[in-house]
Every structure is written in C-alpha cells, then in structure tokens.
Length: 430
Image 1 (cartoon, rainbow, N blue to C red):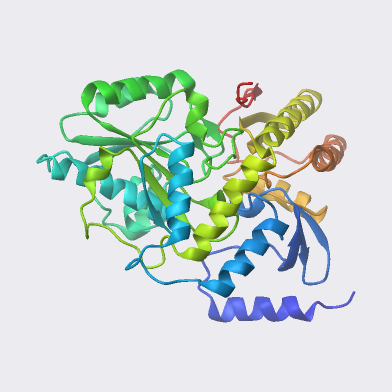
Image 2: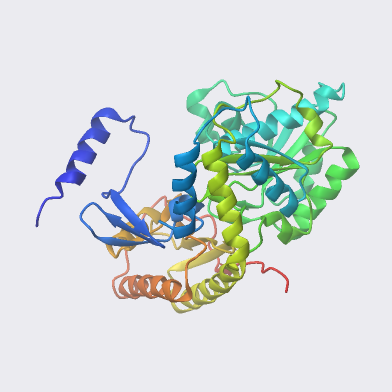
C-alpha cells in the first residue's frame, strides 16, 4: 500500500505543533463536493455529520462559493467603526424571519451565548435591578467552551479542570418543569435552554415543557433564552426550532449552520430586551464582518429559494422511518431521537459509540460519537433521498454483521436508556 505522504506530514506537524485537545480520526480531507469529502489520498466519504451541523449547503456549493469569492475580492474586513451593508442586510433577514427586532453578530456559538448571558444580566441592570443576575440552565446542556459558557453548561466535566467557575448559574433536570419552578427566585433573570440537547445524546425537549416554561417566564418577568446554535437555520425542518414549539423566546442564539461553514454567531432579541446593551457594553472585532455576513445571506437565500426546508422534512421522515425499521429488526438499536436532520442513534450495552463511528468510517461514512453509546448524524440540508438510502443500507449491513457476530458485553457501558423508544421529528405545517 502506498503511503500518503501528505497525510503523514499533516499528522506529524499536528502532533508536534498543535495543542492536543482533539482526538481526530486517521484522515485529513483535501476537498469536498455536495455531501461528500475526499481525503488526501482521494478516498470518498459521505459526510453525515456536516462539520457538526455547520455545512448547511454541503461542500463547494456553487452559489455559496461564488458569493465568498466575490466578497473576498471586494472587502473581507473593515471593522465595526463603520456601517457594513452585508451586516445590515443579514440583520434585516434574520429579524424578518424570526421573532426578533435586533441582532448582535459575533464569530461562534460560544460567543453568541456569551452575548445572551451578558444581555440578560444587562437588561435587568439597566432596569435598576442588578440583583437579578442568576440564570437557570438544564443538566446535560452544552452552551460552549468559554469560561462563561462552560459555567452555563450543565455538565461538571467541562468546568472541573478550570475552577473556580463563573458564578450565577443554577442547573435543573431537563424536561422537568417542576424543577424550573423550584429553582427560580427573585434573583433569576433568565432561563436558558436548548430545544434539542445535542452534545448529551440528541434529546428533544417536550412541547408541553417548553410551553410551560414560556408561560412561567411571562408570569414571573424572567427572560427566556433559547440556544439554537445547533438547531437553527433549517436543521429541524423549520427555519428556527422554536417554531416547532409554538413559542417565541426573548433571546435566541445562532451560529453553526448560519453561514454554511464561514465562522459566525448571532444573538437575537426583542426590542425591549435590546435595552440591555448600551453603547460600549458589548463588541466584537470580527463580528458582523462583510465576508461572514455575505455568506450567511447566501445561505438564507438558498434555503428560501431552493425549498430546502421541504427537503429536510422529506429526508428526515425517511430516515426516522427506516431507522425505526432497523430498530424493530435488530436488537442493536435502543433508541432513535431528534428532530429534522439532527438525529441521535443509541445502541445497546456493549456497543460503543466510538466503535460504531469507526465501523461507519471504515465504510466511508462520517458521523460523530456522543458519550458511550450514541452516534449523531447532522448531514448537510441538501442531502437527497438517494443519499439517505445509501446511508441506511450501509448501517444495515453493519447491524446484520453484528447480529451474526455479536460483540461481548462490556462493563461500564450501560446506555442512558434501556427500553426501545422512537421519537419522531416534528414537521412543518402545510
């Protein structure tokens, strides 16, 4: 077998010069097209994780790459000392499509959530109530890796190595409205939730739970922050996931898929809540730069003009139906959860998520492993039914092989859920 010298050099330099905070698979990619990536040796892979829900339009999308090339030739960055046409256009688009009246642009999901945290506290500070500064979040949530957002994240493992943690957060059980009511008090300024907890295994929030939280916030004068860093921009079959729940947040955060791969973050809010930031209260050197905003405008335009949301719902329905069939036929799958094209597949005790990811990788399919027993798929929203069928066929072959040669049970790998369940995706209304 010929040695891929490009890849070997990439690995050598990575291990020698990059901080080793990742655990990459044995591959490096040189180019992509549609939902496929090609490694340095030219091997083709089906990208069923889409850069972790980032590559909304897939790879090398004609319209997106044309916009990026054109904008890069004209103006990449000019700073927020000046008006930026692309930023103004993107703000208009997002506010027109959502509940929001105002937007602040940053560079990532963590920064968008940092902005949301600051905005909620600033809102009550400027109202003369600085004591209202605590935020309730959910256990097993994930809101980012900055010091502020790991404090908001309801998982000790993200905070422990970096203690002391930023104060002002309470953590309650997800999908438990009584826990919200018990935790809230006169210091509570906001409740911050994901509608689908992605990093803990793709766990959707119950509709009744979210609606009860919204009503509770209204009654108590508490702000509702919805973290849509992963679920926003068409991922769940609606432009924004909150639309599936028939509620409107006070603050919403976006990032990942907004610009199709160009780094961007956005913190959206109502006109009233926007009073939480006065001139000079917040800022970002690169936030809202012409290149990122031009890319995001293109993504939004393509979603609207190419009927991509309908495609998300059609492919999602197919995937959930077929995964349900595989769950019924093989005792390997314990649970299938999610909405739209954000899906978690949990396997029985003894089958590790990392092992399943590796098996799929060996067959040219890319997914992510979450915890011990769940893989996550979040393919580009342009994935076709034919490509989804190909994924199901590959997964079926793996499950058939495991049925003939079952893996031995491994101690300490019990999944969170042990009873077969099926959570169907919500679909957009006609």
